[in-house]
Amino acid sequence: MIHVQNLIKEYGDRRAVDGISFSIQEGEIVGFLGPNGAGKTTTIRILTCYMPATDGSATIGGYDVFTQSMHVRRIVGYLPESTPLDMQSRVREYLNFRGRIRGLDRAAREAAIRRVTEQCWLGDFVDRPIHQLSKGMRQRVGLADALLHDPKVLILDEPTVGLDPAQIRETRNLVKELAKRHTVLLSSHILPEVEATCQRTIIIAGGRIVASGSPSELKERIRGGSRLIAEVSGPNGEVRSAVGAVPGVSGVEVESDNGWHRLTIEARQGADPREEIFKLVKQKNWSLRELRLEVGSLEEFFVQITAKQLQQDQSRKEARP
Amino acid sequence: MTRNVWALTQRELQATFFSPIAYIVAAVFLVATGYLFMGYTLKPGEEASVRVLLQNMAWMLIFAVPLLTMRSLSEEYATGTIETLMTAPVTDVEVVVGKFVGALVFFAALLLATLVYVLLLSWYGAADMSVVAWGYIGMLLLGALYVSVGIFASALTRYQLLAALVGAGLLGVFTLFVDALAEIQGGAWRTVLGYINILYRFEDFTKGMFDTRGLVFFLSSTAFFLFLTVKVLESRRWR
Image 1 (cartoon, each protein chain N blue to C red):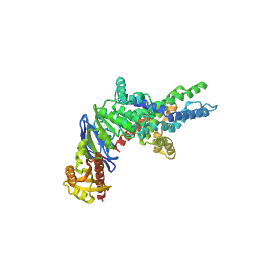
Image 2: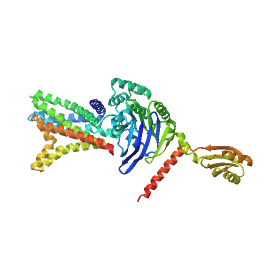
Image 3: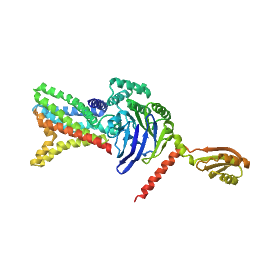
Image 4: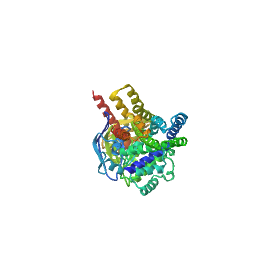
């Protein structure tokens, strides 16, 4: 549905998007994840025909976003980051205007407005002036607008930013619901959000894609750095050296408290030395009150990978004369 | 094309009537023209014709029109609605024309209100109706040009006040400035400067004369500024 090939966007001599390529299949719900300033909004703005790319190509539904922009605009529903709306209008008036410029006739508009106001729980608010609505309600109006022409593709830029927790949950559920009928691309800088709603995540930093895959695939990739936590009671020095000698263990840190030692054990890639540690404790006749494998969270991975990207960018900058 | 333009025009009118600025500008304009009308036309010993009234109006509109058109595109930039507008299936030309027609309709309504003076005038004396008719047609053409310049200025910046200043400044250049320059220049320059002076071109209409050159001047320069506006809108995408 969406194909992006080697997309580049330069603002002056700054590269905001630096050779991004990805594909999104019909019916997929994909999260675009990255720190602020990573190039998410720029990429989205190119896809929605708001600005042209410096280089590379992008198509939506087979139409080129630059040369066949009007076709693309007709099949895309877009919610920009700040949810800009006509403040002077009432909700119904605004949606009516938006329907008109999308070429819906009167009957189609009325039906569409009824449908989207129901979908976005706007029923009681259709005759309220938009400037009186809360941030959360405005978000729903923006979403209703994006859905008005029943677009094949829905592009949402930071759809939950500025909402309270209850509204965030509501919006997430709504987006999940929408994903059944539309192909969805949403951006976020908040990881749990993408983890909760998307089948696939594309992580971008510094204008480049640094990782992509389903949340479980991404987790798989960070297994290498997994850790064990164990709490053991026994003679201090001996615990450390004995555990350190267990095969598969690459490092041990000890915190002692009241005869109990809390061990943070670094395991080698692919190794799971839990059983060995249990056997060791049993053999030495120590006590054990906790033993668990701590899988690195996606959050950690995200921080790691974006920090790495930042470092690379910096060293590249320094390398330049 | 027309359907989109009409939808945009209606939205524009709605936004104009929603903002207090339009009412304030209209009120000040009508009070000021009324005052001048009382002072210079409806006075014993003064020339009782619409000519002076129309010329005074042409002057005041240099400031009034940019205040009416300043929100046109500037507000879209400032609130970000430009993004939803330009990602909807409407062309840049449709956006500009829609905004232009919307502002022109408001201007025409304002002009309609000044017909009261003409009524008063015909009450006291016989107003020459062909002068009135051509004068108001000229006024509409002048308004169209002013509006296109105002919208062009509004396309340049997200700050409404700056848009108004630039708009009035541009109109000032094509009226007062070229007039002053023509004073100190001679020969061919004077002719050229006279030709691009908006107020000179308007003067013919206030004398009740129909002049094709004037018509062509107003229509072509209005089209030119609308074209420039479309180009500014397009160029913003590339930045």
